[in-house]
Image (cartoon, rainbow over all chains, first blue to last red; front, side, top):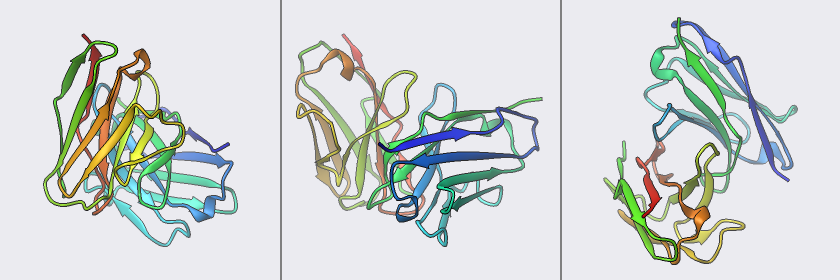
Length: 118
Length: 107
């Protein structure tokens, strides 16, 4: 069974940094691209970042480019999202998802909240 | 950036009735479109990709169609568990983009 479990600090001050983790199991992690999607309170889904299976190709939404870094540890089956220069607009629940043949999410974690507030 | 527009924003349907949801892309995404269902308090769940290939475990009352710029998700006979928000996502171009969602509510 595919499992994805996100974790990270919940509260951060404006301008601060945070790293999210997504621990995975139940599939050959290095064979699949992964992505992060966020959802602000009461809003829709927003794609944030994606990474291919070997970690050599990364992609970002314009809203986070230069501030967020996606990475993966294929030996530890874990996906990461390093976030910096955080603002209130980054407050959201962050989901990691396993991608399939295309960059769409065929399995999703339950999400982890990030609250940017002073 | 490809803009995905979903309509209607809210659809009020009685249980047992048919629901038709639309997703339009600002430029062609070929067949690189996925649909998701999100129930309250839950993570999104993949329904379709390609855009008519049903994901694992999705009931046959759900169907997806379309290509290019126009896509449709149809639920033939709504069940109580189908009342949720539905999103489309294109994966043809970077950045990936989602539609704003259609909320299917009980009439």
